[in-house]
Image (cartoon, rainbow, N blue to C red; front, side):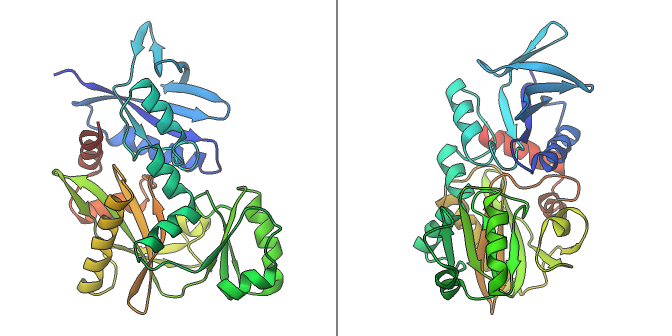
Length: 323
């Protein structure tokens, strides 16, 4: 049987490019090479290229092909591991649709919706799913600090509306800290979301295609050593990640069923991760991650391992469910 050519997409145009590289390499390391012929594709602001043995090879954007040693590599499938733009906001999906290459995530509309935090919150509210109170700023003008804090209260979180890995995110504990936090967030995105701080237990739930069905993975409880689950907590070991989470079986089942329902309602595909904050036994959704981290230390591989699913099996399952 002919192996499928798999382009593993990494990089991106945001501050998450290095993290994306780790996720892409994880796929390259663990993909089943008896079934698939993978190649690492870098999509960056400096250009597009395939990487083979440390060497760069140009990508033809007309058909996404690249020539290696006189042989043409034309992808049958794209495994998207680009965190942030253009992999998580629908841009690369639109391109892949145009040239007829299937891919591992939701479609352009799903990705654009879930990457826009303000729109995601509105959609979830429409499904009667608990979320934090918030204010979306398109410019610095429009609402005074007093009007913002009358809605969110203190403490509150200030974050870029479209971004990830907690880059540009601040926890504001006093009114005189709000202006600086907003300025930091506006450096990362043209829109800024300000939300009420919720104190509770943070848990994260991966949802994957498995054996023809949706499977919610064991929950991971996040205990940050810092003010919140910031970049250092996520990527520099400044947190405890406990799988399975230390919550009741009933609450675990509720979070898992909610995650699967939201996956279907927002038309997700492939593997995703939904982050929750549990406050007084009520599970509030914080964020939907449609291209979750997939490095050795990331949450999804930890949860899969707890469910006795290898990284190789998970990658194969995502490909076969979405190709």
